[in-house]
Image: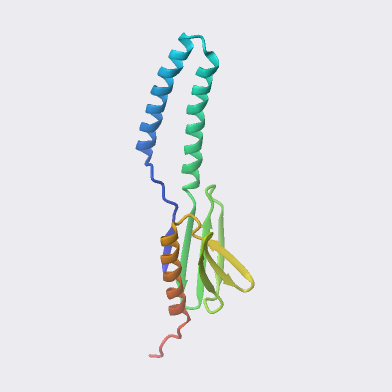
Amino acid sequence: MDAELTPNRSLSRPAFGLLMAVALVVNGVLATLFLLQGLYPVAGFLGLDVVLLYGAFRLNYRDGREREQVRVGFGWLHVMHQSPRGHRTHWVVNPFWAKVEAAEAGVSIAAGGRTLRLARFLSPKERDAFAAALGKALAQARKLPKAG
């Protein structure tokens, strides 16, 4: 097994640009109308609205850079987690000791008294399918190779 898990982002970058353009135009027109009526604070809040919308999507896209790579071979299970900031952590364990479970908070791998949680960003169906595939790969990795 060699799987790479990444969070899904439903809004593409061009669509984000279009969304921001529409938000700027609509809030700009509204702010102008409020300014003409002397309601300066409302115009300021409309500008703040656009800035906060932009910031929220920037954080969302930053979090989308998270990666998890799961590789299983005979006698080993390797998990690499890359944070949105690029920091990588590696976890290697013997598949004979690994136990996989799908849970609400992700897929957990327990081995050697430690538990690793991954696939937190997957949907419940995707988590269940991934846990089943990982369990099957670990079962294959536990089988002894046939002597030839």
